[in-house]
Picture 1 (spheres, helix red, strand yellow):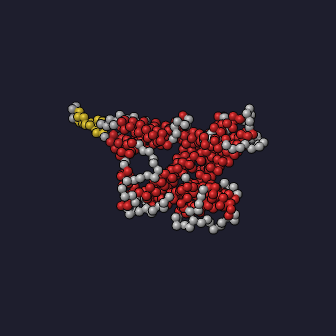
Picture 2 (tube, helix red, strand yellow):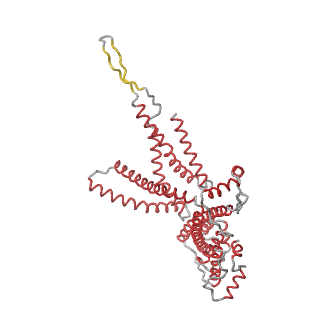
Picture 3 (cartoon, one colour):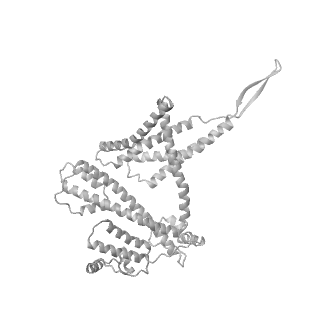
Length: 461
């Protein structure tokens, strides 16, 4: 029985780790070593949770059943009519080797230690390095980790010296190994307690607040404004990098020793950014960059693209959530009791059959009405459209191009954002009217805008 449970739990942990990695990781894009390392780390983490109950139950079984299941037997001797007690016979047959779990835990423990403190940090530093060769990336990764772990070793060395002089204990190899293992376990337990304490409070609170759709929608509006700012800042950083890369392309011509390195940086860009880079006009007589500056530019490019991809993904997911919550508010007034989506999203056939629009309406709308948690009415056009206007206004503000056109357009967009939030707002410009009325009218005519809420949709589209 224990053999079957042991094999089933090992396979279940592997299947779960592989499924999550396939779902949340791009296995086809990453290197095979990265995929194997992450899969091993996740697999051992799940294996601890799966195997630990089996290990505890097996230990309890051996202590209370097998080791105590002995009976003394009496043997009668007819020669002197006396009886003697034979050695006890153990009736519990143990077919499970005793070294299975200790060997497994040694493999899991030391593999996790190597992955946590050596392999994974080296791989992270290697992927963020801006060097163009494998040797250079490894050197940069070693330097980064040496600085990080050197501080730890310096602190630990001071503590060991203090311990040796105060306690008088001879610190040999096994004792230092035990101290290092204890320190690692203590740090892991500290992080576990910290994160678990946060999750025990945050997860129930999020579940409770998510049941209040009105609060959730307001919170999502707040989050998308922050994500919009982060997204604009990431785009501005990428624009600065494209400007530096354009100067490097103008300075390094065909046949230059650094041309291959510049092409390596360009290949990291997505198609949209490549087209944007090619549309830029090269500067006149730029100075050629050095190898060190190209390495720094490559490192900044990797980081900026990663931040941009993360912010765009978070912004898109938050938009989808807001669209759904606004659809819930709109369908709460639907007479046909069928959930209608504002934007068509294709779904699998099985999901369309089992999860019909009527069921979606009952789950998303009626459950909120029965619980007494009514959502407020979202104005026509939706508040997300107003936040799109705000995003464009923030982008114009962040770019810091202080000319008349940008300042006047910023005033107009902010006023249209106020109109989108509150349809009763008077369709006039801000009180700080720009001095040049002629330029203002030219902006309105060129952009096709009017100062009333009816043209908000035209701008957002």
